[in-house]
Image (cartoon, rainbow, N blue to C red; front, side, top):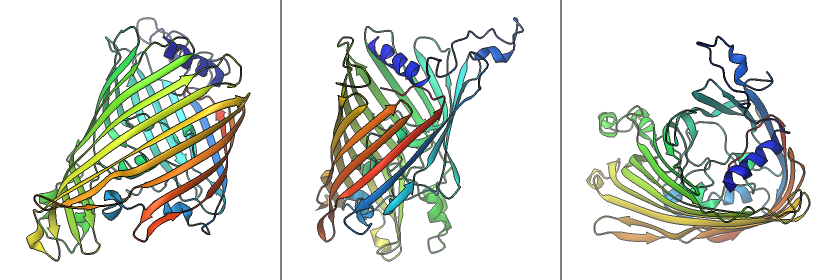
Length: 446
């Protein structure tokens, strides 16, 4: 109940008193009543609702602009056999010294009819390119608290994964997500089914089946391998094709006990399993690893809504832990065919803890500590010859001014301590960030 009130309050605030998703007017139906579809939304304003998020920053560091690259060099199972891109053309890092324009986010949302809502999110890059990040529908009328989602969307795995970039409390993706899930988190094409039972407090359970073409976990390099003329002609048949999905499956559960009107607590667990994880590596010699991978996660979020206005006295704390395993074998080795079939098991974990406090009206301060690689090892062969890597960490602090619900100005300092092949390296990073929101925008999740 408190969660519903919290979301309603935020919706009214962001929407200036209007229903953020334009659903307040009853839909009369286009059939027997003969009413027009214009009655779906309130007031005949835009349908769909459209909003634009502008974001940019000024950035400096004490490594001549190379500190941001340093945070991507941490030793571990996804560095030695690192992630890859899929040509979606943008990342969430890559800061240059001086001024940076981050991807401009476009949101379109609408109630299609009594049965479906639809949502589209695209980003415009600073070079003018456009990428589609999310495009999905959700059902409105399934019984017993069920809801289905289909299309391309951010997975319900974990707590931070469903947050869009402008919702991030800090500039950068946290290290556990970056190394164990990917810079974008889990964003894929597929279907989701959630169940919110009628209980005295909020609970939600969900399952997903996704195509499984991810940056890190559930990585699928089969298409690159097939295109590599150096490899065997029968590799396509052995590795499958990108059409052979779904290959990625998730489950998650959330619980929010009743703590009274001003307090919110959300606890959750998640699991992810990739049935076909493939990695193509060209260094030190061309080889392919194939097998399965999985990630388990747990999260806890607490929020206190102080009686003062404009966020003064508000407190929010959140933490997540991820544990990832890749159980692979050598599917192809250009220099040593005898190695094919050899086992490779990779294990790595990580966590982040962050909080923010409203010390004055419209002002808040935040801090985050994150680490990846507490467990960070590779086992080769049977029974296993482990190779261990050091852990990496980062500490950050920020100061945020929100003169309105549509503007955020933020100053941030970060200090990564990254384990590289040359030992530990550190840096100091300084950001001055702005986020401006235009148009009608739906309420954010807790």
